[in-house]
Picture 1 (cartoon, rainbow, N blue to C red):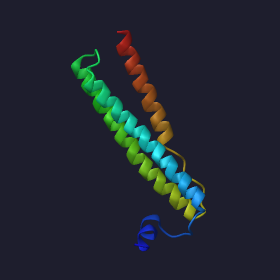
Picture 2: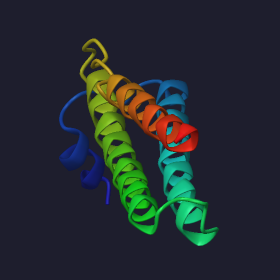
Picture 3: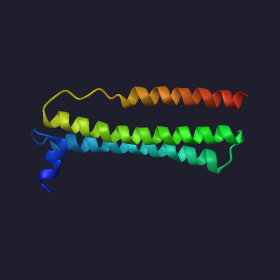
Picture 4: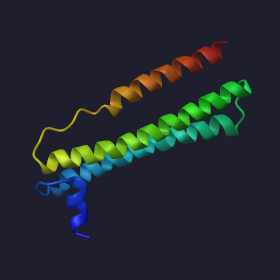
Length: 117
C-alpha cells in the first residue's frame, strides 16, 4: 500500500501536511461546484421550469456535462498540484478557472436571453 502514492504521485519528497490538506480542501470545493452544477440540471428538469422541453433538456445536459468536466478537472488539478509540491516545482496554472468562468458567463447569457424572450 505504501507504494501506491509513489506510483501515482511520482518521485519527490512528502510535502508539509498542511499543504497537502489545503490541496484536498480545494479539490473538495471543486467537487462541490461540479455537484452544484449537476444539481442545477436536476432542478431544471425536475421542476419543469417554464421553458420549452427541448431547451430544458439541452440546458440540463449542458449543466451535467459542465459539472462532470469540473469534477474531472478537479481530480487532474489535485494530482498536478500534489506532484508539483512533491518535486518542489511551481504550482501549475489553474486552467479550470478560465474554463468555468467562460462556461458560466455563456450559460448566464443563454438563460438571460431565454428569460427575456
